[in-house]
Length: 385
Ligand code: ATP
Ligand code: MG
Image (cartoon, helix red, strand yellow):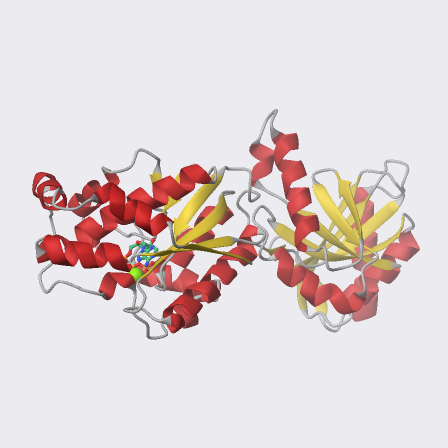
């Protein structure tokens, strides 16, 4: 008898002719994410199997599975030969400490196996009651847990009780590449995680305003980027110096448009960087109406300087819902550490909430937009995690 981890996917089942592409990508992503461990990996009818791993690695392996987009569930199964008594033995191990109601669910792909599925379930249920009748009883309609018996054609039977939910979504890399604008706040790491979950492979871009924002602010962004990277199969972070742009806007443009014009610069730089490295979209953590820079008028103004798709996965999310996800992906505690973001430098007292695009453009015409962008590209730092 040995252990095996059965890994399942979900939405990939809906794919028609392209299914092979998604399956292969998920397989590669799983293997890549587990490359530090030794195990045998096999594909088994829309599922993957991990066997022959060191039992000491079980917790570490399953923790990784929880961060792989496309993995829907996994089970820790016992594997025995297709023999009824062996199945009884495995089941008795799994049910030893269980309390509550249960049912047996048998799936018999090996049609040479006797008894048939229904009889196997009944007989096995009876044997478990003989052993553990003090703690467990049968309820086929609404059981507390299910004993699954999967009798396969290749002579192996998988017996398990737990089906653990994971991320679901689509394999990272199956939905193109995007550039995440990451700040030190709560929202942008969550936005990044959500795009990974939908299969987009991310790069990150952060605007740094040294000396107005210090090393601690950058370290914080690095920490958050690494967390997003855990869902992305590793990640690149580009840090672009933004100070000279902010100073120029501060000096030459009306205060009320400070943020609006800053954001237009961010988008232009993001689009240029994205094109350079083959990213197909820009992603932000914006949420409608959250702050002055996230009204539909402000979004229109920053959107209008780029032609690449701008994706805002949090646009209709309430802050509390975003915080819930941030806690789940373990970015929240880092995000709430005190820090200065470049957006808080030169923050106007009364930012334009509904900036008029024509007035914004007029204000911006005082600046050497192209020159400022070129200067920003002279100081790009790249980190790979
Ligand atoms: P967050 O919690 O993600 O910082 P926020 O609620 O503070 O968002 P803003 O400061 O208006 O909102 O930023 C909106 C979005 O713009 C962010 O989610 C992020 O995608 C991007 N952004 C803001 N500041 C930076 C920065 N310094 N570098 C890169 N992107 C940024
Ligand atoms: Mg912010």
